[in-house]
Length: 475
Image (cartoon, rainbow, N blue to C red; front, side):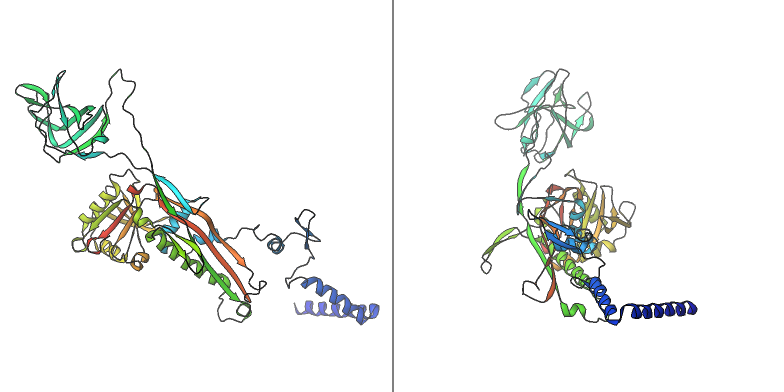
């Protein structure tokens, strides 16, 4: 190796001496200056080409004397190259902002306005209660082999002719109408104009030697709407209509700006703290703020007297949910979890896997429980870039996650059950980063970048989501 270096040095000396004898010292200096200018030409960026951008006849831009590079692209068309911040943001502290993270993985819908109108539809109610007591001897008369009855419920509108009704709290009878056999089942003949529904009993009672009476029912018994039963010649049936409810939310403009002075950039640093590191910290803080707004924000239109502009605030999903479960921290046990799962997974036709995000108090109580074969806490499950603990019950599975955002917003003992299938994010301005040239504009001698997003989160099926509240804290 040493011998090779010596040979290269001797060759360099010979070449230098030959150039001096052939062209002279001043010619060599001029050639070196040209080569040096060629290498460092432009704004100080090292390049081996003298490419430049020129204007076209129709206002376009063209690259001449060299290839198109990223620096030339940024100079001639700053919006051409997509910033990687959209991909990076979902990897920055996903555990701290689960709602924001979930909405990004699910995919946002583009909206052409800052005010979003959306429709939410619910399932038709499946149960009601008897409004007035019914006496089995108060029959409307005989229809074929069956005695008809008119019953009044708290919600007659959910029933239609040809539907069947289960009355689980009232006994049905066998074919002789004497011995009990299962729960009472009714068949709807018609809806009365003045209120009430006309029914007959599929497993009715024998009264005074006559069969198929609708047995007596007390006020408040539960009536469950079941399937329709058509006859052989039926072609049509009662119509079914479902009208969605129009709802509205505002997109809020979220922003974060990062600046670094030129002297700060070139100064020697003890550790590698770069502009990208500052940008990441700013995005973390921005996402935490967005998470709080998406959860607990209040939809409003404000007017800033200093800016003379209107400010839109987004509404959080906490107030959008239609279900609520209350518990007492003094009686928190396995039965409480069963009740919570029952309310979360029943009477809403939602998914059988939902997410429970809770404050420190709620998660602490969940951790202290003794689990059994009915309720089990399994290993960590990773979904949407977040690590959850799965809580399984016979009703469904909950992906449990602790969120300090609940603590910071005054919901230390509370939680929120969200159905990931029915949460939607609307974006008027997708998350993007823009460079600000404050130096050329004469504002400050800094490098600056501003990140912006105008968005909101909505629950498309409010009945599938649920607030979990400790009784002493209130709603």
